[in-house]
Amino acid sequence: MHSVCVYKGNCVHITDCIIIYLFSIILLSHEVNPIARGPQCGDPQKGVCLCVLLLPHTHTHTHTLTHTAGSVEINVTLGMLQQQPITGNGPSSGRGLALNAHPGMHALNSVHPPPQHRPDGDAGLEGTENGHENRRDIGDILQQIMTITDQSLDEAQAKKHALNCHRMKPALFSVLCEIKEKTGLSMRNTQEEEPPDPQLVRLDNMLLAEGVAGPEKGGGAAAAVSAATSSGGMSPDSSLEHSDYKQKLSQIRTIYHTELEKYEQACSEFTTHVMNLLREQSRTRPVSPREIERMVAIIHRKFSSIQTQLKQSTCEAVMILRSRFLDARRKRRNFSKQATEVLNEYFYSHLSNPYPSEEAKEELAKQCGITISQVSNWFGNKRIRYKKNISKFQEEANLYAMKTAMGATQREGSPQTPNSTGSGSFSLSGSADLFLGVPPVNGEQPDYHMGAQDSRFSDRLYSPRESRTNGTWQEQNTPPSPAGSEGSDNSD
DNA sequence: AGCGATGATTTGGG
DNA sequence: CCCAAATCATCGCT
Image 1: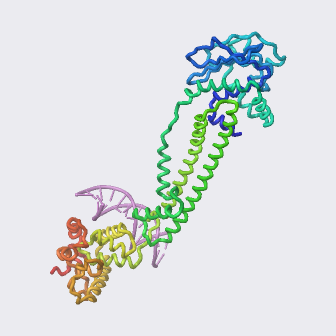
Image 2: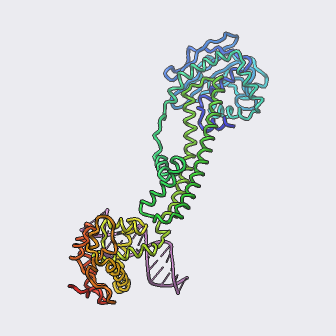
Image 3: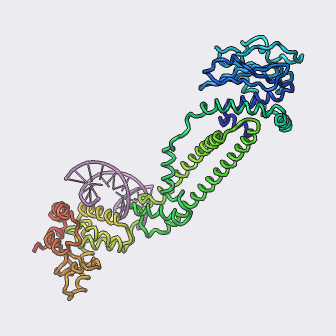
């Protein structure tokens, strides 16, 4: 079974098949008298001529194998095969075999007088004696080779045994060794090293990055999640979803590793099998270590293509999982009430210049349990929405103004200005660039003092770009106060 | 379901 | 990279 795969899967070079085949033909014919000789072995530049005198016997058999780089040309003339190794009605059921795949190439050797043969023997080949023109398509040979696999195991084993025990075996074996040595290398040097598939590398990297392919447990999933979080997606407080994500990811991971293991196991099993086969074959034909190596490489290539598919689908699964769990847009959660409050407090207390600095953002993020980029998003959204419809936010503004004012009054008596607390704690409520000194609780809107005051008192909190952004914000924001609250702030 | 609110993303400018 | 503005997509209330 496997051997068929090996054959069909190109694992065994055709030359090998033919050599095996020829070998068995020679050995199994009980009348083997292979005296190969050949002063006229064809074009010497073209290949190798085999001229071996083994055992002088009554009959001579000549076989010549000629290999060229691209194709295999075989010219074999065997005489006196009185018993056919392969029965049946295949082309081989004749006495001899004459092959010449190259049209221009004549059967090279002297033709021997037609020996006496079995009465039934002529079915397949008649060419040996009377014709160098008898040529068989290489397909015929292949056909024959394939029919080997149709034989029953016992039959095959018996033949193998016969083959191994044959007295001619060692001699022929050495012949084959010689052939191989001279021909094999030149034919196999092609297409050795392949650069690693870039796609595979990409997949590997991705799986590694996602924590699927990385080191077992612990690092993997967590790393992926933290990566996703830091990339700006997720609020850390949704640990529930994280654990869900982790669980799903580890499921994928498990499946991936199970499958991978399976493939690896199958691969090594198959490799072992093939190597055993080759080892077995090496008793009847020369198999170089290099050849085995190559075979193994081929098998690994085949299996790695399967692995690539596995990796690909794993990647897809991870991507889907990611998009489901970590795409914040899909799973948007409103910030907690407390967080919104903190953000709003800051916003309204810095209404004249609601651009928190990096530090302020950090602090806010910490307070709200969200990421910095979420803070940025929030302020971006807030600014634009506030500006678009100030009147709508009036009430809210009043509310927070009042709150802030309350906070300020409570801290009243403290000599230091709120923002000068810079030493450490980010005092949000106190940052009121709007309320400094303003008696708030008059029911009216909190008038916030623009610009100048702010920058004076809360430098630390403003972003470096203040000057630029501030201008824009002021320009568009302050003048058209609809409810009179904003614009009409007591411009003291 | 509809609708407004809201967080995130995209686009374009500096 | 930050911002404004537009837009998307979901939430959460009715």
